[in-house]
Amino acid sequence: MAITFNSEDTKFNIAGHKREVSAWIRAAVGEEGFRVGDINVIFCSDPYLLGINRQYLQHDYYTDIITFDYCEGGVLSGDLFISVDTVKGNAEEYHVMFHVELLRVIIHGVMHLAGYKDKTDADAAKMRERENHYLAKAPEGLLAGVKYRG
Image (cartoon, rainbow, N blue to C red; front, side):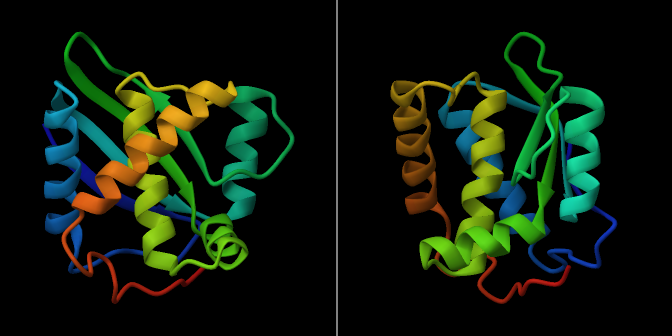
């Protein structure tokens, strides 16, 4: 069972930080009462993620993350496709550092695998609470040296 990090249609990567991010994800998954299966984090561009959104979800809009859930029982597995272009734009819009927004999006996808939804206001509020909870538990400076490269 592994957490992997890959890139599609972008030069972006988190080289040098994979172990720390994996440990943070594992801790969150454990705290939620699950075990880690195979979780693939795939960093990509806006056009790449838009293509996935159109092909698999029949949505014609940009987004920061699409999560494909392959969970079985108490084991979390899935693919997290993350547009670093949209993460960068969101970081600018919300006046936060790029690495903080990236961590938020990563844990957002993990929380989807754990069963959290975000379609209603109440569900979105609970999701945001969980994101903030785990962001507060992230090791200080996690991904701080990672810069946006589309």
